[in-house]
Amino acid sequence: MAKGDVDTYYEDGQWKNKVEGNSRASSVHDTKMDAQAAGRDMAKDRGVEHVIKNMDGRIGGKNSYGDDPRSSKG
Image (cartoon, rainbow, N blue to C red; front, top):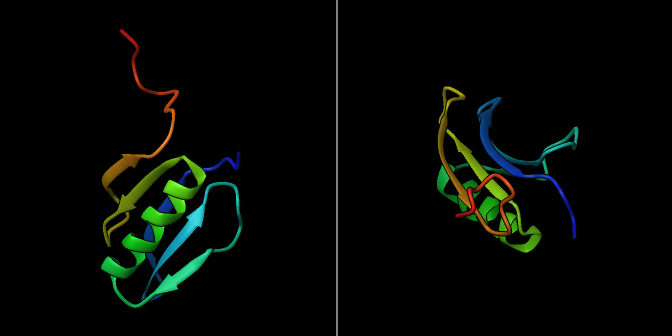
């Protein structure tokens, strides 16, 4: 299975999705809603976490779509 969480973020006037470890954005969108939907689909397909950032770069939300090794077991 592919590795690398998916980040949705704002840069240079556009909303982008990038897979952790890649140097370039995987997709570019005009609106946060479009980028978030595409990022969610990418994360679901890869079985990884989707990190959604606000325009200022701070994390606004996270969703996990796989076996999250960071979650507690108990």
